[in-house]
Image (cartoon, rainbow, N blue to C red; front, side, top):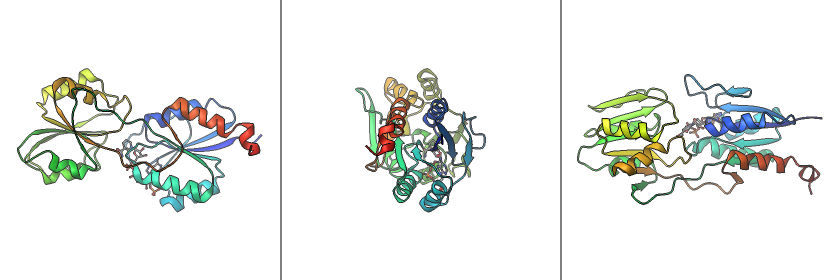
Length: 256
Ligand SMILES: NC(=O)c1ccc[n+]([C@@H]2O[C@H](COP(=O)([O-])OP(=O)(O)OC[C@H]3O[C@@H](n4cnc5c(N)ncnc54)[C@H](OP(=O)(O)O)[C@@H]3O)[C@@H](O)[C@H]2O)c1
């Protein structure tokens, strides 16, 4: 019997967990795709390919040539370009498709959130007066804060910010999550952080700083997600496994 070929677009904890769970199914043949940006990517439980496809056309061609049956977009909720490409490629090839999306964090009593739509909008939201800013947004868009050099920055990322910010006072922390609330509170206190800039990524792994900020009464400039496309979505690995079951059920294969 031919096994179902599944391409998982990854780069997240959920993608790794989903790949591990699906690898237990003897009827599935998996390939996990990474962007290839991280210098030392984590070990993965299934075969991996790395690097861009060349836009939605390249992804569609790859899906056709490699005869995939299902595409799963399990990339980070802020990886907008690859997610858009996945929707287009699934439409043009007609192969089955769904996305894994963690639910967004909801503001809780005691949270001091200022919501913005983009990282660029977060810069003026910091205000004119100098503050200590914890940037927990990854390294790719940190450059926007060159426009507000009056602040002191603490910047955490998996790989180094390159080039470094063109500001007089920046401290860099290289670290990979998950980050626990107690350690996050200690980091915020030690650095006398006044405000955090964070993406509303959802999930538990990076929520510690949000909970710690609530405890300490620290403001969070929260970059909200873009409006998602109208697509089939699973919120958890369990939901995703259920969707795969459904897609590969005998009824679906017969087109019932
Ligand atoms: N953005 C974040 O905050 C964030 C946080 C944690 C992890 N990540 C992970 O880091 C990766 C890059 O994120 P990004 O925000 O730079 O993405 P992006 O802006 O949406 O994608 C830029 C380009 O990178 C390539 N690409 C991205 N993800 C890929 C994948 N899984 N496999 C193959 N090619 C991929 C694609 O190139 P082509 O057009 O040439 O195919 C895509 O057009 C993603 O896999 C994401 O899951 C992102």
